[in-house]
Image (cartoon, rainbow, N blue to C red; front, top):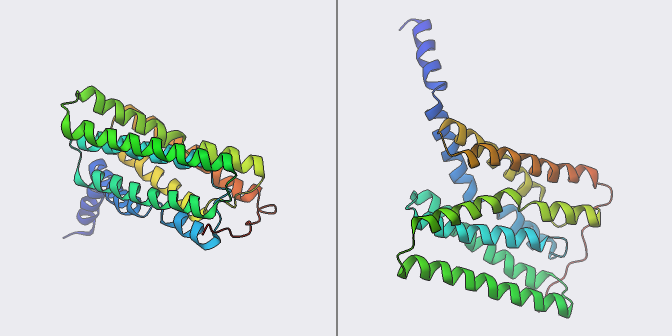
Length: 233
C-alpha cells in the first residue's frame, strides 16, 4: 500500500469523532472505577479527616444515589450502573473513615448521625421507588439532572474549606488530578458523541472548578500541615 494511502486511512480513523468519543468513554469507565481510591488511601494514611469537607462528601454521596435512580430507571449501559454502585461502596467506606478519623464534638457527632440517617433514607427511597413503583420517566430524568448539578458543584465546599483553613491537607492531590482528567474525557465524549447540552457545557465548568482546587495546592503549599492522626476506638 502506498505511504500516502495508509496515511489517509489512518487520518480518517484518527479524526472520526465517534471513535475519539468511544476511546474517551472507555478510558473514563476504567478510571471512574478507581476515582475515590487516592482519597480513601489519603484518609487511611494520615488517619485524619478533619480537613475533608463534609459538604463535598455529602454532595458526592447524594449525586451517586440520584445517579443510581437515573441509571436503572432509564436503563443505562451496564458500565454506567457499575460505576455508580462502586462509587457508592467507596463513599460508604469514606463515611466510616470520617467517623473513625475525625475528632467530633458532641454537636458534630449528632450532625454525623443525622446526615447518615438522611443518606440511608434517601437510598432506601430510591431502591423502593425504582423496584416497587411505576415511576414516571420524568422522575428518572429529574434524578439525572440532580446528579449532574451535584457533579458540577461538589468541589465547591472543599474549595471554601481549604481557603478558610489555608490548607489542602484534607484532600489528595492525585484525587484532584484524576478529577480533572476525567472531566476532560467527559467533555471530549460529550462533544464527539452528541450528548445533551448540560454535559457539553456543564463539564467544562467543572474543569474550571477542579483547576481552582488544584491551584490551592500551590497556593497553600507552605501552610499545609497534616494534622495529628486521630482514630476512634
